[in-house]
Length: 77
Image 1 (cartoon, one colour):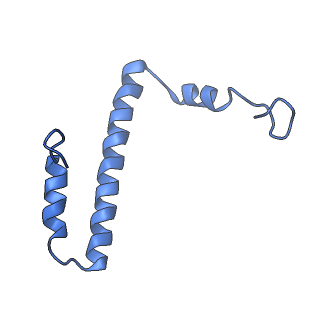
Image 2 (cartoon, rainbow, N blue to C red):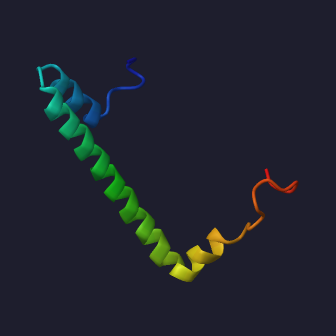
C-alpha cells in the first residue's frame, strides 16, 4: 500500500497473524469469530437506530407487506 493509505490497525494485526503457520481449523475458528463479532456489532447499531426512531414489530410488518404484487404478474419486476 502507498504511504497515502497506511494499513489500519486490524490489517497490521492480521498481517502479524498470517506470518505464522496456523492450522486450518484455527483459521476457520478465527474467521467465524470475526464474522460473529461484526454481525453482533451491526445488530447492536441497528437496534440503536430502531429504538431511536421508535420502530416496532408493526413497523416491520408494514415494511414487509408494502409491495404485495404477486410474482409473475405484468406489474412485477
